[in-house]
Image (cartoon, rainbow over all chains, first blue to last red; front, side, top):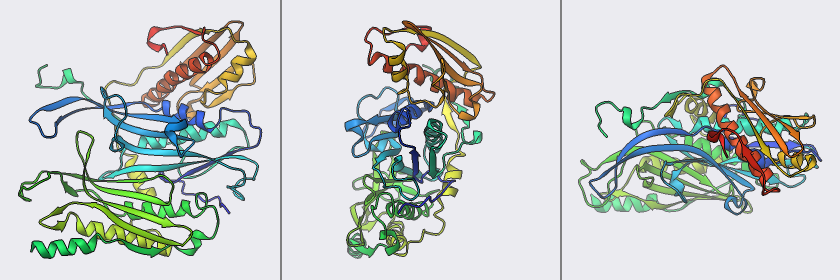
Length: 191
Length: 286
């Protein structure tokens, strides 16, 4: 018996979304892909020592939200993650390169009753992985923006659509920016 | 000293068991009932352990503890099915790896109503478990929270969310100024097929039933200033986008959403029409 529980200020708490039967719309997976692609790519200049050597490496490390579906997202219908890696790195990244990940589960009829009528099309978006540091959740603004864009896309699908659970609203002060100096502009350095 | 420390470490890492509060097990299935508050209880146990100022040893092998390099401690929490959780505590290395202090595995048996915590990987210094008090406290809190069905004190995820959302993001370039983008796609699809395909774009719809298809871009509160529309004509789709919200940061978000929209619109049309082509500014080409 699912209740309409609420944790409206938490970006960790899951979101439950539901649209009435026969709603003609993009679907939960497409809206998650669109939301993930709408989160700007943050970038930081870094310089670090390469393990087990005396050499240093420098470059730009990016934070980019990526979405997957199909085989790559199993056991979830779709996944989105914040990947934190060097710009020139390609291919598969280790799990440690992810700052957080959410999994989308398309729910069968009746699993959300009585919170949602049995025949509605429901989905559960859950935070499946996160990294905590001394300052809190790494990449929280990207997660909050993804949740907001996804939830609002669902709500736009039908006037009767519902989203409840964790935080899915947006405050402009959640996205503050620093403009990092580029490599060539770093004072006192020559390239 | 070393032998006593090793003996104490052996005791600390032994698996320990507990129960799951019966209220969490009352309704089935676990995923949409007990699994949701149980995940919250586990988060509260993880969040209650402040990591500010905590350091992990990142060196390995035989070296003096006094001079061993240290890094800021992080905690990684992961689950795949919401009955098993992996919690890793250690330092993030610059090359992307983790110098782990230890790994705790938490398993919930929803049939038996029991929980188990086990330490599957650990680091010792002179035989003593790295961050041993933290390790014991976390394991105990996980078992306690699930047995009582009550979150850990100081483990508020709302408070952690608020603090985390105040951290600025770094970018290389300033956000764009207000701008407009006009381009068109050529396609052999008829209007019905075009509408079917564009339905899959996934961005927030403003109007997809009238003659002009419209979507918002970025933050929905700015939908009057950040939006994109498509007018269909035989063989051609005319796209007009406006990114004009007042806040620079929200223009950045809308501009990123537009780039994604252009790519997705092109892809969904191309999926049914190999001959579809983009005609517009090169820097926006999908």
